[in-house]
Amino acid sequence: MTSRLPFSRRIAIAFVLMTVVVSGSFSLGIVAVVHFVEDQLISKELRGKLNMVLHEDIKAGREPRLDARTRFFASNSADHPIPERFADYPEGFTEIEEENEATYVYVLEANGARYMLLQDQRDFEEREKILFSVVLAGFLLCIVLSWGLGVVMARQVMAPVARLAGQVRHPDQLDTSTAPLAPDYADDEIGHLAAAFDTTLGRLRRSIERERLFTSDVSHELRTPLMVISTSCELLLEQPLQDGQRAQLERMARSARDMNDLVRTFLLLARSGPAEAAEAATLADVAREQAELWEPAIRAKGLAFELIDEGADTAGHNPTFLRTVMANLLRNALHYTAGGTVRLVLERNGFRVEDTGMGILEHERDRIFEPFVRGAAARGEGLGLGLSLVKRICEHNGWEIAAPSCQETGACFRISFGACRAMDEARNG
Image (cartoon, rainbow, N blue to C red):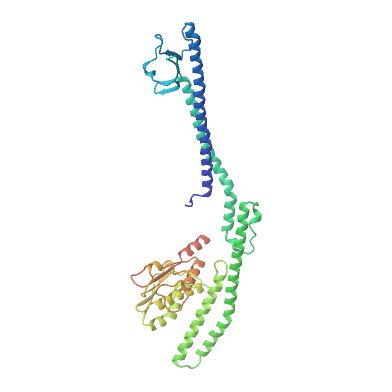
């Protein structure tokens, strides 16, 4: 399972774990060596003292020459009988550590008799505790120092990575004039990563530039034939026509206007950054315009149409983008509503389009804005790009789009200008 800790934190933790293993092993080694040396040296010392007592003092008939901390016992001596509590101790060296007693015991069996030396070791134990306390304090200090060193080293290691991340994240990296990243770094892993970013960003820049040029060229080339179609429709509408012919020409003229708006939309989307419109229109103006265009078609299908103003603001918006978004949502409402009502509701910070059609399934609600995605109840031969275009326009302008469950039946799409307005106020403030 991949760790979610920051990489710098993992470096510091690695330093601490390495210190725990190394210094812990070293500390345990010190403790083990102290105990080993203690057993070997004290055992040798007591064995030497006991041999001296047996071969020199006892043979000479005098009292054992021992210091105040050491006592002699023998099973065959009435003057130095072995205490009952030590009678069963095995031959050799034994260390006794009890609550109020710290004693070394050395037992030797010779000629059917048991000889024993007891040496008080409380002073040595005190020194041993001091030594172990120093070892423990050094171990803990090493851990603290390793954490501090790990944090410092992590910052040093991560500094070029953080710098590279900031450069890659910068929006100017998609500009073709931006300098490559790799020359600013050493020929190491970070430099190789920067070179890989250069390669990937180069491909991305070329891809974006090709898309931008294609969209711009297509949008530019389509303007001329669309202008011809629109002009021809206007001229023909001035002539005496039958009702059916006039209706078809008006439909052609409206379609030409819609196509012209789409061309302008694609052209504006192809430009980098938010487009500054040469003109601005209020939400109410665009809504009335779209209502005049779509209400006849909606009513011709036997549906009711309502334009409701709940307090629309008077701020100016890009009319091309606003018309395209509103027209796509009204077209979808008309297409997917068999009976009932289509509503265009103007709000304080946006608008919403509601219908009483077949609605949107809950599991499809998050995917309907993706390109080429059509719902289970899709009709006709559409490609599923209308809502995707609406989503792109909203993202381009800083608007928000959602498909909440506004009613029991039908669909509801809400466009909010709140995010865009907040950015404008922050920029102007």
